[in-house]
Length: 229
Image (cartoon, rainbow, N blue to C red; front, top):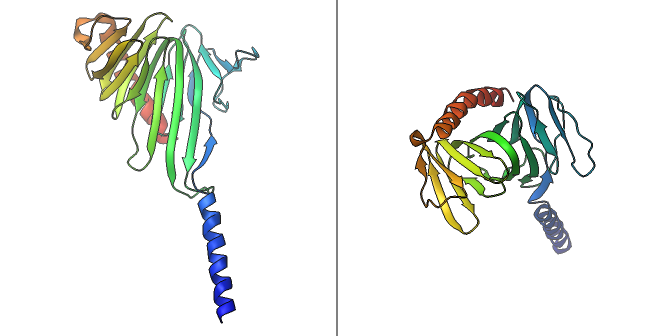
């Protein structure tokens, strides 16, 4: 009986050890293409092997996505992070990753990570935080790094030397260079480089007003496509 009990305990310990080793499994994912309008390509700049984007395209971390004049693409980076890349724009997918509690498809999701870099042009982003899963989502330009503080809707524009962030809903944190981190709430914007230490009301700037109008028009489209996904 003692031998049998010891064997059972040993087996249980091995099983628990194996389960412990299987936790926190992290894997790379791909961006999901919701829709494409006009000429949009993706690929690696180092290899210069760009190809047209289709709804079945597999866009991985390291890939660059470019839109031509009048074109656009709607993407899901990770669950809860959806964006539209406008015409004459370019982003680089920096990181797309999911971490799960085990390697089984039914296991609980622990963390979602999505980071992109806006090299030029404009994006509109809708972000919704999961109640059960941590999300690490951010956007960088040559001047700033943006992270959502809550469920939010915002637009980002850059020409490579100047960047503008306009918030239509929720709140976004922005940091860059020697300037102190800045909170941008709904109805406000900020531009870098700038001497201002506070966000400015979008009603004071025609471009910021257009950013909000565009973002509010894009969000229902993204949400409708996300629901179908």
